[in-house]
Image 1 (cartoon, one colour):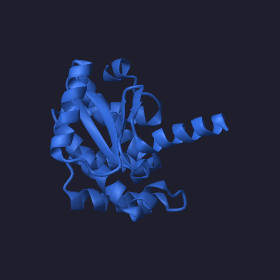
Image 2 (tube, rainbow, N blue to C red; image 1 turned 60 degrees about the horizontal axis):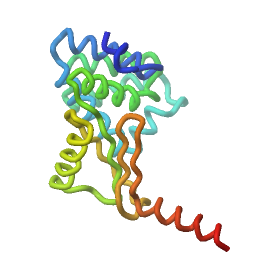
Image 3 (tube, rainbow, N blue to C red; image 1 turned 120 degrees about the vertical axis):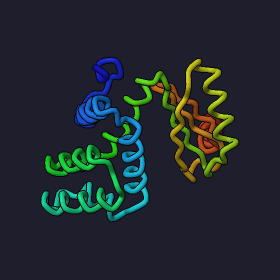
Length: 186
């Protein structure tokens, strides 16, 4: 099983593993991945959608109807629609972002890719992403799938996470270290 080798555990991991196995059987891995990436972007961009999936006050029926409407409007595949419907029906929408991430990790693992999270103070250009991808591929020795995020509090530099390893070369961290060093002197 895919979950055994990737370490997909917990609620999100179990749902992601089930979806992955269904998508693999139906030969829809990429289509489902595209749908989930689109849904993840929608959740990140819409405060209302984020509130819908996280609120325990909204009824199950309202959540199911809303997620069905969103799935239809986005043109998701039948498998993705059914999956999101089951998640909503089971009142597990609060874990949907984790399920998306776990699915994409399972997909990358099955392809021999490594997933890296790159956090920067500003959006990176395509050239910068390609340079980071090349450097990581050389260092790790396998293809790297980059998930980029912007955190303006970093001020500058990058934070790169590959698996359990993290490289924090942000200006924010450097300033914090300098502040601690100066306090130690005085």
